[in-house]
Length: 441
Ligand SMILES: NC(=O)c1ccc[n+]([C@@H]2O[C@H](COP(=O)([O-])OP(=O)(O)OC[C@H]3O[C@@H](n4cnc5c(N)ncnc54)[C@H](O)[C@@H]3O)[C@@H](O)[C@H]2O)c1
Image (cartoon, rainbow, N blue to C red; front, side, top):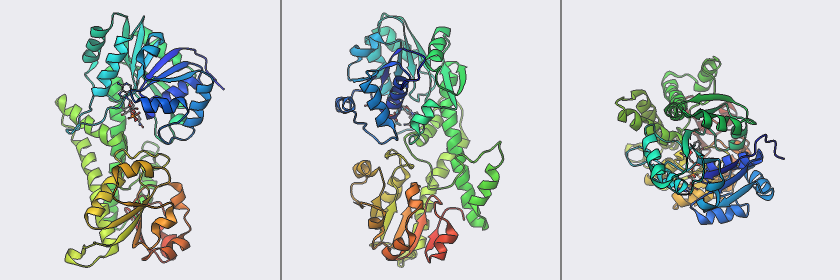
C-alpha cells in the first residue's frame, strides 16, 4: 500500500542497484515513476517483473507498483522525460585504468535527458561523480535543450543487501543545489522518508559521498592493520575492537578485520577520491595508505592459506594439486554482486599457485561464473568441502556460521579451516579437532 504524501512524475535513468531501488521506493510512496535503461533486454525482463540481480524484497516492491500502474519500465527517454518534474540520473560511474571515475554513461544520460526536456525539469544526479563537472553538465543540456532546467546532487548511500530499508529509512538525505525551487521540490518528494536533511551546494554534496565511503574504508583498513599487529603481539583483535568500538565516539560499525573491503563502491570511490584530491592539488596520503593496506590484506590471506596447508617443496610453499573449498564469493552477504569482490583476486591468486578450487555461494554463483570461469562450483557447502584439503571462508553468509561442523570434519580430507571473516568461534572449532586460522587472533 502506498503511504505517500506526494504525487509527482519522475524519471529514473539507469535500472541498476541504485536506479531500481529508487524507482521502487518512490513509486511505493505514491509517485508515478518511469525507469529508463539502455539495456533493452533488462527493460523487457523488468516489465515482466524480473529483477536482474538479487536484492531482498525488491522483486515484490517492483511487482506491486508495476501492477498498481505507478511504475513503468522503458528504453525511451521521449516516453517519460517530458512528463517528469524530476529526472534522477543513476547510471554507473566505473573506474578508469588510472582510478578516475568514467563519466561516459553520465554524459550520455544527461544528453539524452536534455534532448527530451519540456518545461522546467530538475535533473538530480544520484550517481557518485567527482567534483567539478557542473559546467560540463550545464553545457551539455544547453546545447541540446531550450526548456528550463536546474541541476542538483543527491548522492546515494544505500547498502546492497538492505537497500530498500536504507532508502526508506536513511540516516540522511543530502540535497545539494543552490536553487531554492530545486530544494523545495526535493524536500517535498522526500517528505514521507525519515532521516536528517543536509542541504548544501552541489560540490559539498558530492564531497559528502566520497568522504563517507573513504572514511568507511579507513575503518576497515584500520581494523585490518590492527589485526596484523595483534598477530605479532599475541592479542585478540576481536576483543580489542570490542573495546575500541564500545566508545560511542568510535562505534563498532565497519570496524572489523577480514580479507579487505570490496564491492562496486568502496574500492572505486577510494581510488577516485585519491585521483580527485590530486587533481585539486592535495596528496591524500591517508587514503592512499587505506588502499595499500586493503591490497596487502589479500596477499597476507594467501600466505595464511599456504602456511596452514604446510605444503612441502621449495620455500615450503609448493601447493600444486591441493584442493580447496571456498565458501562465499559475493563481496558481502545478501547480494549476488561480484563487482570487485575480494574472492576474485584471492581465487585467481590461489589457482595461479596451483591450487584447485571448488566454490559455493548461496546467490552469486551465476555472476561468479562470468569472472571465474575456470574453477568448479558446488551445489551446496557440504558438496564443496567433500574430499578437500581445507575449507576457506571468504564471505560471511550467516548459513556458514551454522554449518554442521561434525559433518564438515568427516567430509574434509584434512580438517583445516582458514576463516577470512572471523565468522566461526575459535574455541568451539578447535575443540572439534580442526586446525583453525582466522584474522588477527
Ligand atoms: N550499488 C551500490 O550499492 C551503490 C550505492 C551508492 C551509490 N552508488 C553509485 O550509484 C551509481 C549507480 O550504481 P549502480 O550500482 O546502481 O550501477 P549499475 O551498474 O548497477 O546500474 C547502472 C545502469 O545504468 C544503465 N545505463 C548506462 N548508461 C545509461 C544511459 N545512458 N541511459 C540509461 N541507462 C543507462 C546500465 O545499463 C545499468 O543498468 C554509481 O555511481 C555508484 O557509484 C551505488
